[in-house]
Length: 246
Image 1 (cartoon, rainbow, N blue to C red):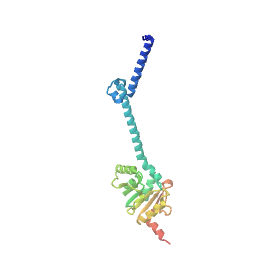
Image 2: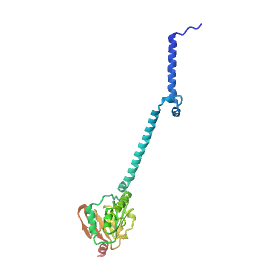
Image 3: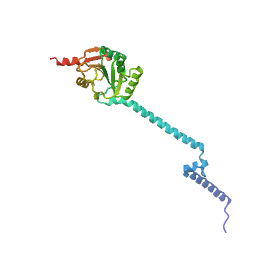
């Protein structure tokens, strides 16, 4: 004959079954696929719709923030690279805008001169535009595309876009034989090599105007200004005549 189960033991068994049921329910919730929760399955009410919408909204803002940051860095790289890369070349020719006094001195050395003019490393186009306003057909060569596009805009704004042209090009790859006036804002490292290039390519009637730094082996025919605003003018014909003298 089986003995009767005490009442307190029965209550304990009931409590254990209730705890087991809750634990199993928790496991079911953890193991339930997200789609089941969204589709309103047996446990669908466990994840409120507002919580799901908030999660989706945060995710969208995260993607948007990442896109904005990535796009900004890419734009910064595209703009900064043309200004930084000159420092990585063998001969660094950085962009340093011409001062108002330098432009005035260049124009003084061009008085009573005519013909075409070229600015080697034209930067933001100041020299070319100033020369075009004085009646020259002026051209600027510059490697930085942003400066070339800005120069073209300035020429259009100043009303000289017909006589002031700008091109993206390396000055070492351009032939200057067709120009009567050459302007260069150079650096000491490039001047000896540029001397040889211009000596070979320019016609007798050409004039070379050096700003900031003179040519190391040429004797200037005119010197205008002082300090960093000094301009040295060299007439090709005079130089060649000097070389012929004993």
